[in-house]
Length: 149
Image 1 (cartoon, rainbow, N blue to C red):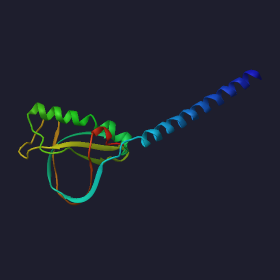
Image 2 (spheres, one colour):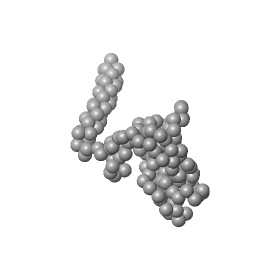
Image 3 (cartoon, rainbow, N blue to C red):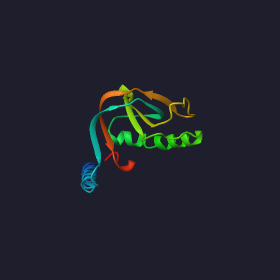
């Protein structure tokens, strides 16, 4: 009987310890959120011109920052390295766009505008995004490390 009771108590202890760890993790997340610098994001509606991009893409399991961040971060160094190696100048700020891939997640595209005369960049896709008459645009001002805050 004592061996059975000891096993029950150890199981209860393990379950309580796991609950305590989840509470501690939530407290830590809330503490981090309260101590973060203000986020500088501008949201506006505007028309978007057509753009010629060099693009690197990867698939994320979902749309949330915890999913997108780890997928998009390595795409920018890849883009910069490929463009530099090919001797192609970046012609504007970075652009990210996303495609719902259904059960396969989200296709994350990161790109830089390039000169319209460039049709091939080794290791990257070259795409033409059409102009959009009216779009809601969110622009993050600041370090890429704070994009997913």
